[in-house]
Each structure stands twice: as C-alpha cells, then as structure tokens.
Image 1: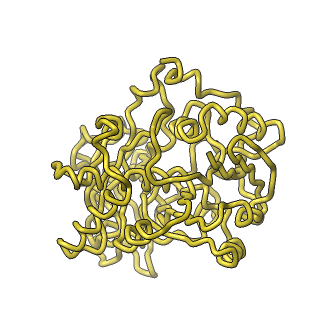
Image 2: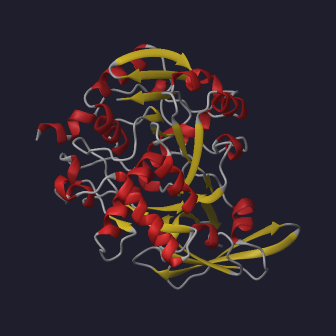
Image 3: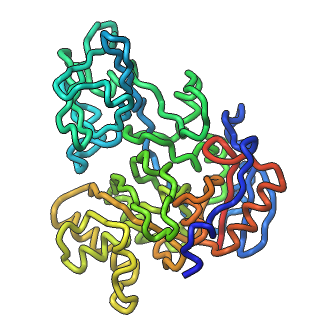
Length: 400
C-alpha cells in the first residue's frame, strides 16, 4: 500500500534547522500544539495549560551513560567501543552498571580491523583517587561482545563516568562538550543505562513540574533504556520491512496500578514512553494467552491477532498485576521491539509530547500513526515558523 512507502515519510530538513546546542534555559523552547487538526504556537512553559484536564503524564526516567570509550594501542591506532547493551541482553541494566571487576557488553567497534581477536586493549585512568587499568578483550568476535575487566572494587558506572564520553546523536556533527554531560540528561533522569536521551523530556524544569502540580496533572515514571537503534534510518522502500531495534523496559507494580486506576487521558512524554506504554498492553495480552516468553515483544506481534480476540486495556494491565502479585515481584523486566506504523490502534496513549524528528525515521512513522497525514501539516508549520529540530530542538504536543 502506498501509505507504507518510505517516500511518504520524508521531508526536506535544511541543515541550519538542526539545533546543535541546547538553549540556555530548557523550558524556553517553543511548543507547537496540534489539537485535532488545529495548530497553535506557544512556549513550552504553556504546556500545563494546554494538556487535557486530568491528564497523566508518563515519563521515561532512564539516564544516559558515557557509553563511548576510546582505547589507544601501542601502535597509535585508536579503537572506539560504543556500549550498546549488556550481554546477555536480559540482564537488568542497573545491575550491570554496579558490576565490580568484570562487565560484558555488546558493542559497536570503531576501527575494528585494527583490533586482533586475541589482543587485549588497556586504558589507564583514575577513579575516586585510585589508579586502575581498564582492560577490554573479545568474548565473541562475530557478535561484537566485549569483556571489560579491572582489578579494583570500583563499579562499572564509576569507571564509565571517568573514562567514557556521552554519545551525542550523529546528526549533531560535533564532539561532546563537558556541558553535554548535564544538558543531554533530563532533570528527572535516575536509572543509568541509555545511550541516547529521551529528548522530549529535556524541556522540563522544576518550575514546569510545579505548574503541572498546580494544574492537577499527575506524573508517572517508567524506564526504557534508549538504544542506538533509535537513530537507525529506514532503508527499505516498504517501511514494514525495516528491522526494528529492541530495548529493555522496566515497569514497577506502582506503574501498573496507577495506570489501571487513572480515569483521564494518558499522555506519554516522548516516543520511548509511548513505546513503553503500548508495549505494556501487549505484554498483558501475552500473559493472558499464556504464551511462551511473555515479556519479549517483537515488531510484528501487535499486528498478528484479530481485533475481536483482544482484551480491554484494563484486562491486560490486571493480568500483569496478577502475575506480579503471584510471583511476589515489584517490577518486571521486558524486551520490546514494538514498531508503531500507520494503521496501529493505540491502546494506552491519548496523545504525545515529542520533539521534531529526522525524515524517514521510525519516529516520524510513529507520529504518522498517531495523527495521520496531518504530520505533514505539523512539520510544514514548524519549518515555516523557524522551529528548531531534533534532540536539542523545540517541542510539540500532539492530541489526535
């Protein structure tokens, strides 16, 4: 069908419209409000007054880790290791960050040909006043799995904060600055493990949260560790053939109980929060159907079952709460590869707070699934009115 052709999700983004640095004050960004076809231009500080009454905002509290490491060989060659996810991938990221003496990760390897399979790389650094050597060696050359080792009892997180660099999005086309260590984090970031920020949240400040509280807008926090795949462009002409990346999501029992009892609109802050919320429904479906591996979701599952076979969202959420009560768990760790494309029926979300995304990306496709072809009107308006685009750019509130 024509609506699934990649050309339908392209637009012309001039290079000078990409925001390469953040504003001096986060909440002074602009806010484009799309409300059932109507568009208006506001400031981000106006967001609390533009949300539907009794909304629940859902945030992703993941924290970006300094995931880019550089090792120099005696020959002078530099090997870049970009941490993608723990190995095996079902290990809880927050536990992996607490590893002491050894940690294993799947990585992207820069200058790979200069690093022999039997060779160990070494990096000297100082952590909390203690000198140490960080060693890196191949665990699985074919799968790009790397083992890191060190002799002190420092955590892997502490080592990364000394040795690593924040992995800025490639489209910013610049090196990281020290300021990015703070500005490329949300003010509510808490759980370390992402290699990219949930950038829709970068605009929020304590003052905005105060306004939300005064308006009676509730907040909920879950955790999706954003992976590098979020920047992967769609290369197939038929967008449905794109291989969607998988990311770890952690839900607490409180998340589920609050979503079950909330009676107003649910508005995710960012596409990662939206993917987390929609995945939650499908994990509940898998639990109700007693399927194998109920907490792994591939990109096709949401389109595989007939509508008449699907439960209400309350039934799906209750199934997960029942599972947690039965097993005594306070949280569930899941892997989602959900791919939201036009024709998807939203189960949990009633709108979206999000930035302006790259042409031909899975994020544009997600926006089109939410507001249909009006996504072009939104982006044309933003371009005509000098909005700043991508991670450090301006914001939008989309209410279908």
